Image 1 (tube, rainbow, N blue to C red):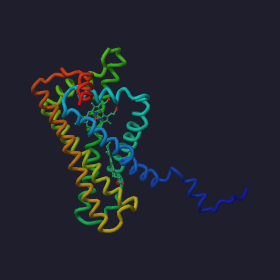
Image 2: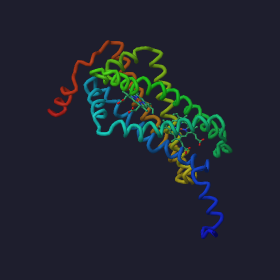
Image 3: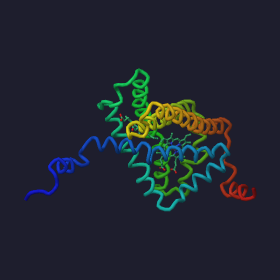
Image 4: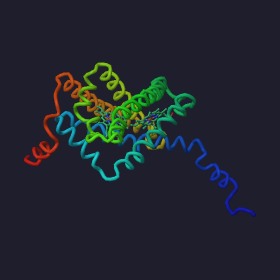
Length: 248
Ligand code: HEM
Ligand code: HEM
């Protein structure tokens, strides 16, 4: 039967999601939404540690108490990160860049984008194993308090180890760099920053994103480290902090 769709369009429809171009676009988009949004939210939420043990544990409890939390985590965090990470490793190992024929500086940034992606892959893998997955394991084993796997004392104890701390400093810096430089690439790839001027402005904004979120992440890591070295315990309970905030 003759088709009413023009042959060229029919061919492109049939290619559909098998087209690597679409997978690459999806990879690019997923780096901003939802993963980039998650990264900013996550670093800000963890920075409550700078206000002390009670504030940090309150935030952990508030997020853990979200309805449908496990489903939300799978859809908004795990599937996008697995897709972006695995496809990203594939691109870093085989792919050719379509930004590659630019200046020396840009080529360097593109190289660093891939290297930081690989570091992020190992960092996030270890980090999730060490936090959320440990909490799930404790829950499966019937522990009355599985949150202790991600509580103040567990975090502080681990950050006191200089190797663990160094690994986090590298992991946080590389992941935030990857995100900030990724926003700059994203602007060009999606035709948002076309002129030289808009690319300059975008470079300033991305440098700002890098600085702000690296400082937030490293300050948090450092707070846990000093808590661990000083054996600071989570003596202030979460309800006590809520009451303190309510009195203000
Ligand atoms: C899990 C480990 C990760 C790996 C292996 C990885 C790998 C990559 C690679 C290779 C690229 C360059 C793609 C290309 O050549 O076009 C890229 C781009 C990008 N990544 Fe990642 N990434 C990872 C995690 C992340 C995270 C956690 C974020 C956000 C917080 C992120 C945000 C971005 C952004 C915004 C881009 C730019 C997209 C574009 O060029 O249009 N990535 N990633
Ligand atoms: C100082 C820095 C950081 C601290 C203190 C920290 C702390 C935590 C904690 C306590 C959890 C467990 C949350 C829960 O299960 O409810 C967690 C989970 C997670 N973190 Fe981080 N994190 C930091 C940096 C990062 C960075 C840079 C990334 C990169 C994207 C990241 C990605 C994740 C992911 C993907 C999860 C699993 C999400 C979930 O199960 O809800 N974290 N982190």
